[in-house]
Image (cartoon, rainbow, N blue to C red; front, side, top):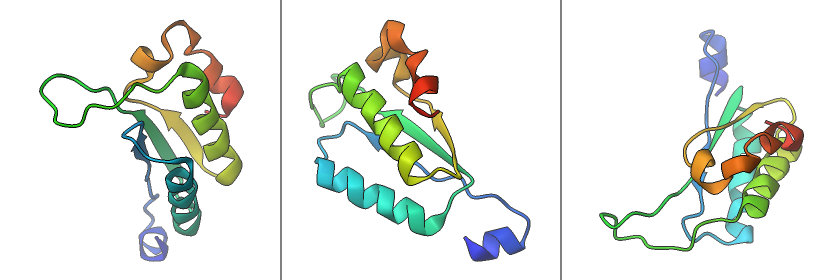
Length: 102
C-alpha cells in the first residue's frame, strides 16, 4: 500500500461475506484490512445459485448490517461501500447501510 500511495494511487480492498466464514474469520479479515489502510473497502454479500458448488445459507439483513458496522468501526478512515448482493440480502432495508457506516 505504501508504494501505491507514493505513486499517487489509492488502494481499494474489500471482500465477499456469507461464504460460510466464522465471526473469527471476519475479525481476522478486518485486521488484515486495517494493516493495508485502504482508501475504500467494498463489501459484497455472497448469493448462492444452482451453478455454484458452494451452497451456504444466505446472510440475514441484520447480520449483513452488523458486517457493515463492524467494518466501519475497524476502518473509520476508509470509504465503506456495499456492492454485490445487497439488493438480495437487504431487500427493503438497503437504506440502513448508510446508518451502519457505508
